[in-house]
Each structure stands twice: as C-alpha cells, then as structure tokens.
Length: 55
Image (cartoon, rainbow, N blue to C red):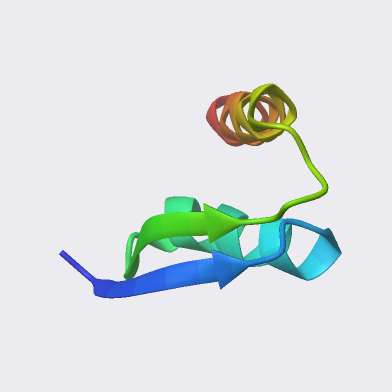
C-alpha cells in the first residue's frame, strides 16, 4: 500500500508516473483526470504499458 495520488493529465508525464507506480508499487493511483482523452484510450494505453512490463 503506497501513497495515494491522483494524476492530473494523462500526457507524457502522466503516463510515466502511472508506469512507475505500476512497476514499483510505491504509489496508489486513485484517479486520473484528463478531459481531452476518452476513457477507452486511457484503458488501452494502460493495458499496453502493463503488457510491455510483463513481457
């Protein structure tokens, strides 16, 4: 259980923070806010990042 954080913007830096949170497990991402990116795109990008980490 890590520090609870919210990501404001899912651009380059937001994706890096999310990727590091998944890899290291020290952050608990509880919310992602980006009004310009649809939810299905965020989920697809998240799955691609997780897939790349697992392989």
